Length: 95
Image (cartoon, rainbow, N blue to C red; front, side):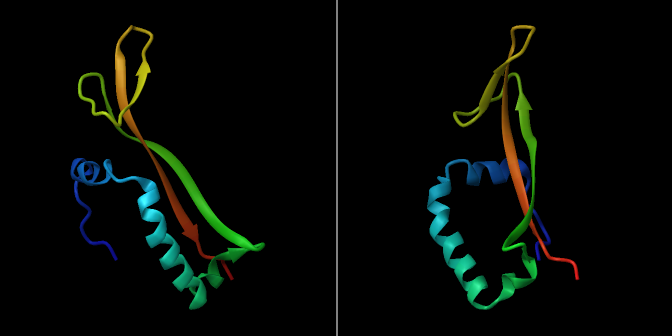
């Protein structure tokens, strides 16, 4: 269980430089172990897994930015810098 989540600025400082491909071996290893131990069987539905996915904005500013920010041009001519987040949750099959 997670009891204390660091502030989003601290999380961003830690995670922004990480290449998602660098996480793939760890994810694959954990997923393989969960499959072998049959932990994921309660989450299967029609041969796959039920996953809820939702996107949200994590940060937005017209003045503060970093090299990893997304950018958009507003109608009033200002630039807006922002970060997007995609969250996913695996759902257990209801019995």
